[in-house]
Amino acid sequence: MKVVILCGGQGPRIRDVNEVLPKPMLPIGGKPVVWHIMKGYAASGLTDFVLCLGYKGWVIKEFFLNYRPMTTDVTVTLGRHDAVEFHGRHDEEDWRVTLAETACAGPSVAAVAAWPQVVLEAGQATELYLVTRRPDPAATAAPRPSLLGGH
Figure (cartoon, rainbow, N blue to C red):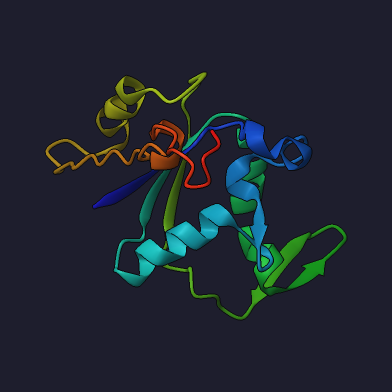
């Protein structure tokens, strides 16, 4: 089963940070938040990911394209026969990450629903889960009368 993660938001509430990084790339303990989300799915055996990119998607692409050299020791041979040799392993070696440009200006269920047709093989089963935020009850609650007699 593929895990589809929406990574296209601008994150206007974190404006001071997202001038440089898109919201999914905000670091927590030295790794981007999207990596931690993926790690949680991988702990349940789900390691085939589709990241739907949007705002500054190239930053997410760079992270995953450079993931192996940035997480292992490397020997680089310079000269006529350039070569790169990686030393050691990391826990994410069984992950498959598809980086898909969605070209969506905002959250679009229709755009996400179309991705299984593009990414999945013919006849492969699909499940689509949409996670939404519950409204804040404090924001919609009627003001309570004051016990002290004021308003």
